[in-house]
Length: 183
Image (cartoon, rainbow, N blue to C red; front, side, top):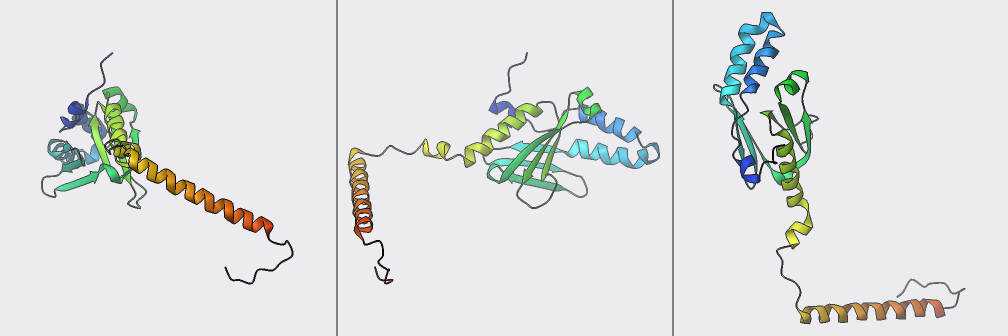
């Protein structure tokens, strides 16, 4: 059993695994008449695909003539899915689909050709939760001083006293009296 990859190992992923090229070959063979068109497209896509994991987000780029780049901050990630078909599972690959609140039904970014797909998914979930979880943010804030605690306790006692007085005033009021609308 291999140990799970560390955050540094995830940050080191820059390219898809070489088995992705094999997957592209097999997929292209499924439609023989389109092989002369699909194979060069897949070759350029495979050789130009790059990933970059940073502390703020993830980026993916590909393309030779028409370069595409997608950058997603961890705070924008809404959901993460893993998807693999029979051939991808046979090759030990999967795709990580990353969805944001962009309004489209599909994934905003699809990381292809990853063998560490579960570790990448867990890493992205931890980053996504770390951005959104207030417990992570408040962990670095200093604790309240005793003077602040005493001030807060005094304010809460004052609020409780006013609530008791209001409840008492409402309970002593005659049950048949109409409210004049004035406070």
